[in-house]
Structures are given as C-alpha cells and as structure tokens.
Image 1: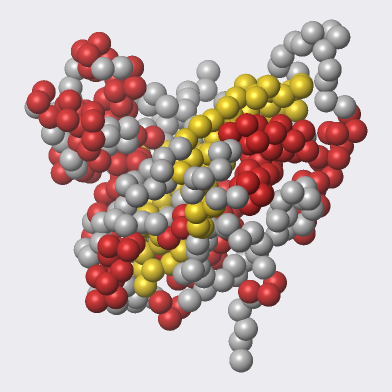
Image 2: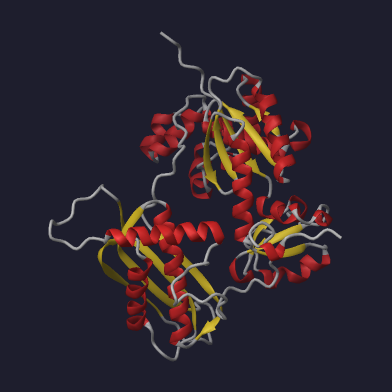
Length: 425
C-alpha cells in the first residue's frame, strides 16, 4: 500500500500588491513611496514598504495629504482593472510551476507541494524569481506542513526579508520553533484583534504559546476554528486546499457616488449600473437569483445634512440571471425608496436567495427563465469578455456617468485599454 506523502503547502503573497502594480509600468517610481486610496479617494488602503513609517492604513486622505507631500509620498486612486489583470498574470505564472493552486485572494495563493521530491525552498526561490521576471511583482513565499504555518512562514519571509531572501521553510523543527516564539499571536492566520484580546489573559501572547495550548479546552471556550488553528500550528494539517471557490451565497455591489445626488435620474443610472455589475458576478459563478435588496442612503457624518436611509427586498418572477429583469425590478424599487429633498451619497444592490442550476426543485407550473434568455446572457458575456467590459450593456447604464467615483489620481489602464498603452520614443 502506497504511503501518503507528508503534506507540504506554500503561501505565495505579493508584497504591497496595489503599490507594486503601480510601479510595474512606472520604473521611475521604484524608489518613490506610494499609497493607494479607497473609492472616491477616501482613505489609504495600501502602502509601499517605504511609505508605512509615515502613514497608517485607513487614514483619511484629506487629513494626510500634506504629510504625504512633505515626505515625497505619491498617492494613487485605486485602479481595480489594473490590479485584477496583474493578479491574473501572477496566478497564471505560479500555476505553471506547482501541481495544485488555490487562489486565496487577489494577491495571495496557496500551493500544494505534497509529494514533490525537489528542494522546496529552492522551488520557492524559483517561483519568486519567475513571478518577478514575468510580471514585475515581488512576492514572498512561506513553506510548511500546514496552511496556517505556511501563512506564518510567509509573514516571517517578509518581516526578515534581508535574512531570508523572501523565502522561509518551516518544515524543520528548529526553524518552526524560532518563528513561533518570535511572532505575536496576533500574526497567526485567523486570530484577529478580538481573539487576541481573549487569548492574552490566558497567557497566550506568542504563536508558540498558542501552538502549545490545550486545543480541546480552547474549542470549548471559543470555537472549532481556534482548535484547528492550534493543531495546525502544532504541525497537524486540518485545512485542505480549495482549488475551486464555492459559489457565493450573496452578491453585493455598492459604491459611493462621486458627488451628492439629489435627482432621481442619476440615482436610477447608478442603480442600473450596480445591478449590471452584480448580474455579471452572478453569471460568472453560474447562479440564479430569486430576491434582491435595493438600498439608498445619504451621508451619515455631516451634521448639517438631513439623514435618510432605506432599503427594500423585491421578489423576482423566477430564479434568473437576466440583467434586464433584474434592472427593471431594481429601478421600480428605487421609485418607492426615493424621497426628494435629500442629498444621496450611496446606493447598494444585494442579490439574495442564490441558487445553482439543477440544485433546486420548483413548482411544476411555475414560470422559469426562457432558454433564449440564457443564450442571450451567454452571448453578452462572451462579447464583453472579448472586447472589454461594457461593450454591450443595457441602455440604462451610461458609458461615462457624471456621478461616478472620484478617481482624480488614477494611473493609466496599461493592460486593458489600447489608448493607454505605453509609448516608447
């Protein structure tokens, strides 16, 4: 009987991903500190390593603008099209070097290296070098016998990059113990600020303390999640690789407007646009939607503005992914919600009661989505995938809305727009 190989996982995580994406096509910014801002240029959501000493995450941009200028830090509006394209390039590069890959987020992925006979630390350095060469994005690589330890190894690779060269292998006992003893318990994957506050009174202050804690007792006091974390830190693999992301149970599309809106017409355009995007996400995971929640609200923090917030749940005539049916329902709901005399700042579309095709039984005589609609939606997505998002869209979705997000500091769309291609003179 063939013995199952010892589990081995790698976590490959991009360094300061958003900031690194901005530098790929701007080599002149290699030594310039960078921050990336949230929607409407609201607050700092990403920082290059050389910007971190001067600005904290989530600080409002209007409060730190002068400080950024003083320290020569350049701010960018978030360019999600660029970041998504660069993420796909990074993941495709990694996928060609490992047997199995789980894309965990836009800037990190777990690889299953179990059974590989090569030197895994050397493989990690090869992955790091190839991703840098092929995409321009720097990454750190953490290797261990469990996913939780691999995550911690990646943290160590970045924290002590000068000593590790960006790659840490924790499969050896000595290295594992050293990292566990030198990492705060708050750095452990799944241990947030609240859990850390509960663990510290129990004498659990480092990852080493947690690895040697009583897993059963912590499960009884907290949850099975913390028990699995303890066992993973101790070297017992409890978390498998998820190669296919499970379908979402809800899909939300919500944005702040670039300016306060008082008229119904531009809010209707925004609701139609958000419904269009939510329907795209719905079809991408092969789901159908039976209920939607539509909501609008004013700003919450200006004491001089009147406050209003309201939402309504609408039932669709049948489980559908038809953007036309969904947009009609959303706009009709908006008519009920809208009240004149307010300055609206945000709209939200939430798709609920999502169902996978073939996984539900409806009434024999109930109305179902026509086959022609499925073919039409498939053709819509095919055209937009080939020629760019929004090439074909519902008439209620404007091409360049006046109410769109403020992104006054956004970089070029180097990878998704022909008119933004770099020019060499």
